[in-house]
Image (tube, rainbow, N blue to C red; front, side, top):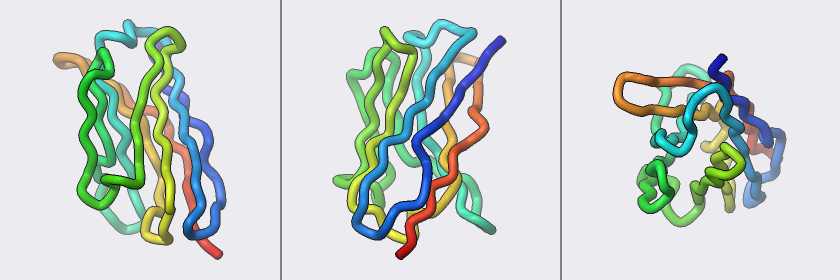
Length: 116
């Protein structure tokens, strides 16, 4: 049974930091490119960051560059998203995604709210 379980979301003040985690099971994690997406209320889901299967290449949406860092630990079947200098505009549900060839899996999401 494939599972992606996100955690680490919550309420944080502007300028604060959070670390999101996504633990994978039920598939060969180290073969998959991993991504974080987010979806704010009333908006489409958008790509936040990507990391290749071995972790050698990362990419970020322009608005996250310099503030967010994606990493992975293949020994723990886990991908992380470190978020710094958070802004109210970062408020959204954050989703973990795993993709390899035609295989495409999603987590249930974790809520991040940036507010004073």
